[in-house]
Length: 219
Image (cartoon, rainbow, N blue to C red; front, side):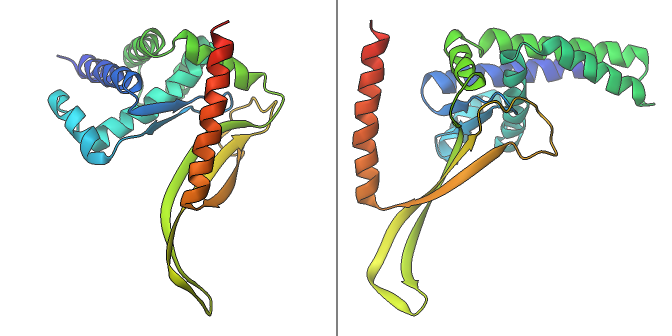
């Protein structure tokens, strides 16, 4: 088996795992119209490693595949495959180590990877979410991170008892931001601290919002 074939087989297996993890709610794709969409794992490392073990993937190798897959999802959603492939070919031709035979092999591998992502992961719902962000009139959601902390004191003031809370970072982009350049900061972020009671409040509100959206979808 050639290196290109082996790489493609591994890549397709990674895509199959991603599809299954999306379907069972273990990962979520944050769709973006300005940079690589982000695939966030929603299970702990041990659970993911157990899922990967039958496929003989290491945790680190799978994370590397996630980065490539997320970039290809954005390219496919933007219907930009031909332009992306052309750009890669031009880059390879500028590199002395690439002869025409190797360029042809790399191009074929890239085409197969993009086709696998498009056919397996880019469904109608993902297209709808991308459409909403591409033509958004308000800042739109691009990512979310959280961390549990405990407040023991604030300067000279001690708390009565340690107070656990969550620090959430919400990432968003301004509407109309469409270009992908690595040297431009496209997204902004807002960091918020929430107590347990505030998390409960947000859950209740978001459940109501979800119900209203589901009602509209049923019409």
